Length: 262
Length: 336
Image (cartoon, rainbow over all chains, first blue to last red; front, side):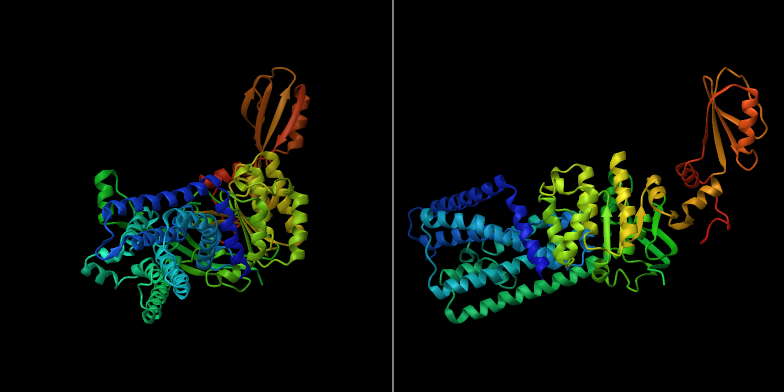
């Protein structure tokens, strides 16, 4: 167990070594929020609400979405690099669980992003963009829990994409497609309220809404108290389902592993 | 019972066959064609505890594949491997606790972090007791002088420094067995010697079993007693380094520096292979022409400034083996 804590610590340290990249990351997050707010402002054109959605609520949605994107960022090519360079062999020579190692590595990145990126971006957002506070204190707690579940859903989905590098060696296209799907279908760019009903029906059958839409709507108090438990159970089921799928895929990948080069 | 036992090991690879040209690559994309390649073909051997064994063979002979199967990161197509009673691929994690691996061309150190951070990490990965960790660090520093660059990020190290750090990292948990995959590749002469010295010392002090794959015959000569030559997936020799030298290194070359130009030399059984100014290289079989007699004969006839007897180097013998110049018969080869 201690080894995995150390892995997370090392991932954290590893991220901190590149100071320029870190500063750029914070600036990027703030600029992206700003640009998106400008776009929505243009759409609203001084109207108080569009489709019955208040402008301030929308702003809060957008800011939250970007703050979450900030911490949901993971090392998408960590496994691919290991597979392609063959250094995965070195990892398999260690008495450790590889999947657990990858997870703790990403947790290290998560902690780094929460401390070093989320907090500055959050302060700027509250002061500059005047986002709404959570609907209530209990909703705030539910939001945090739901965000953690959302992270797990996204992580396990990502893990499946990453493991595919055992077959494809290059996963850039796959990662790009996955990112696009997540951004659109999870409501990260555009709240699902504005989407046509058939698309929403489809999204409800996929894990995507669990990633962004569910936590944000909980924050905004749009999910009735009695339904919160149910949506969270749904998130949990998706996280578990994808986790198991990833586990099976990893088993198969391990079997077919051919170490490149050497 | 031997520590490592390998029986009838076979490994087949599925290779994607690519056709030539643009049309060929499009065809390969739509209808991929596969071909089976046997990388390791029925290899058997056993290694006792504390032995130092060199695996040699030309590129693509199947050495690395064999080593990867021994470490458990490749699963054999057929045959069996037992390391201290465990199957490496089935008990990968338990097996890993007892293994140390050094890849000359790869590093297990964290690239962006100081060396010491990787060592700290390994301490937890292998659950190394504090006392062992400290005494090993002190020992490695004494022998490899790693303290000088412990707090530098790995990416700033020279190859020699990185290699020393990598070797120390692989040995930190006192593994029973260590695999070295080209441990001295790219190092300068002094650094190579240092690494070999360290390896010999550890083997003697800790009784660690060691396996090398290398192309540097000096590595083998200076560290191993035993050598396994692999070619085209099969073992073609398994025995001592000395034995190969005795069996094939029967030619000697006498380099004679004469005091004057002597013209043609004709001695039965002796062949002049090279001439330069007043120097001549004379080659003969040591059983046919006793070297003392030859020297006596020469000193009687000519004035001589200098004399040296050259034994064939192991490298030359191995080269001939790869090229098929030397065939093994029953008397030499224990396994084939």
